[in-house]
Amino acid sequence: MSNEKTIKSALISVFSKDGLEPIIKELDKQGVTIYSTGGTEKFINDLGVHVVPVEDVTSYPSILGGRVKTLHPKVFGGILNRQNHDGDVAELAEYEIPQIDVVIVDLYPFEKTVASGASSQDIIEKIDIGGISLIRAAAKNYADVICVSSVDDYVEFLELISKNNGTISEEDRKRFAGKAFNVSSHYDTAIFNYFNHNNEETVLKLSETNGKALRYGENPHQKGFFFGNFEELFTKLHGKELSYNNLLDVDAAVNLMLEFKNDGPTFAILKHNNACGLAQRDNLHQAYVDALAGDPVSAFGGVLISNTEIDLATAEEIHKLFCEVVIAPSFAPQALGILKGKKNRILLKIHDVDMPSTNVRSCLNGVLVQDRNNVTDKAEDLKTVTNIEPSIAQIEDLLFASKICKHTKSNTIVLAKNKQLCASGTGQTSRVDALEQAIHKAGTFKFDLNGAAMASDAFFPFPDCVEIAKNAGIKAVIQPGGSIKDQLSIDYCNENDVAMVMTGTRHFKH
Image (cartoon, rainbow, N blue to C red; front, side):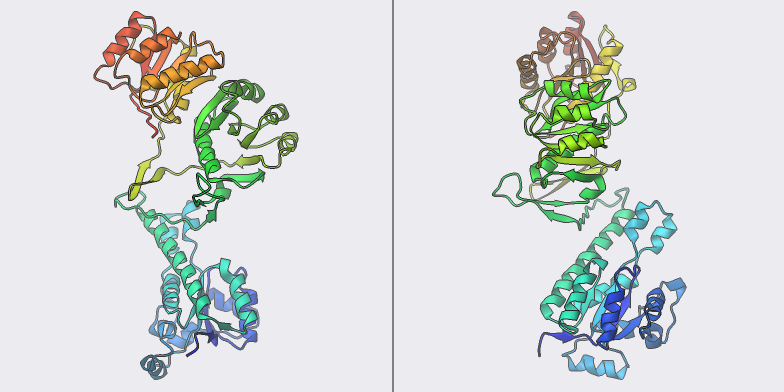
C-alpha cells in the first residue's frame, strides 16, 4: 500500500481563524468534506463553503457551555482508525463513522490568558480538552492522518495540498506529527507550571518553543542554541547576530543594571560576565567617561549598558571604543545615528520586562535550580559593628560596591569611591587573592584608594583582608558577617579607624 494519502475529509476546529480562509477554499476546491463545530463552523459557512456540523455526526449537541463538542467515539474513531486494518474498516462501516484524513486544530490561548492577569476561572476555562485530545489522536495516527496543530504551520500545509492536489506523503505526515506533539507537550507544561507555581511538587518542567541556532557555542567547535523570547526583552536596532558569549555577557549586564534601575544616570562596561567599569554621575556622559576609566583596557570588545537614554554626547564617546554590544532603555535619534556607524556593533533597546524568578543551569547529569538572588543590600539592612560609624557618603559607596559585588564572580572583592568602580578581584580561590588583585588593578589605572569603600561577597574568616585594605587606604567595609572569627576583623577595624558594616546576606556567585 502506498504511503501517500489523499485528503478526502477534514475536521477543522480552531480558536483563531487567522490564515484559515485560503486553506478552507483550497480544500473545498478539491472536493474535501469538511466537518466543524461552533465558531469555526460559522466562519466556514460565512465563506460560502459547505460544512458538516459535528453534531450531525455524533447526534449530540455541544453541551456544558461548549466544554464538550468533539469528545465522541464517532469523531475519534474517524481519526484513530487504521485504514489498512480490515477490522477497523469494518467497524467504521458498522457504526457509520466517517473517515477523517486531516485535523486542523489550535488550542485555547492558555499562556496568554495567564500572562494577561485574568481571573482563575478564566484561566481554567482556557485549558483545552477536546483540542488537545484531537491533536494527540491525529498525531498518533500519522500513518493515515495529517495533524495541523498551529497557525504557524498553515502556510506550509496550504503549499503541500496545493502542490500535490491534496496528496500528502508519510514523511510529511510524520513531520507534522512531531510538530503536534511539540505543541501538546508545551501546552501541558504551561498548565502544570501554573498549578505548581508555589513548587508544591519538586518537579522541573521546561519548555521553550522559540529556539535559534547560534553561530557556535563558547568556542567554534561547539554547537550553540538560544531558547527563549529574545524579542520580549529587547528590540535589536542594529548590528550583527548575537553570539553565545554575547548573550552571556548581555545577561550579566542586564542583571547588574537592574540594581541601578531607579538610580541616577549609571553606566556599566562588562567583560566576561563581570563589570570592568561602572560609575554613577549627574549626567550619563560623565558616567560613561568614569566607567571607562575603571579599566579602558578590558573595555575593548566589551558589553556596555546604561540605565537611561543614551544621548548624543555619550554616543560620540562610545563611538571611539570598539565594543560588541550597547544596551539602553532608549537612544536619542542622533545618538543612534552615531552608534550605527560601526556595522557590526549590536544596539539593543531593552524593554521593561520582569526577569525569570529562578535560575537554571546544567550540573553533572542533571540540572540545578535556585531562586533568583533578589536581595539588594539597603541602608536599613546595615549593622554597624565597629566603634566608628560610616558617614553618609561612605554608606552610599558601600551600597554601590555591594550591588556590583553581588553580580561579580566569587570569590570577589569590589573597591569603589565616589560611586565609581575603582577595581574588583574576580573569581579568585581566596579572598586575599581577590583583594590583592583589586588593589593592584586600581593602582594600574592610577586610582587613589584613600577613603575608598570595600565590599566582599562573603565573610572574612581572618582579619588579613581588613589589614590589607587598611594599608591600601580603604576606610569603610561592607560584608555579610557570619564567621566564628568575625570579632578578629572587627577588633582590627576598631584599632585602625576603619568603619565596618554587616548585612547578614551572602552574595556568592559561582
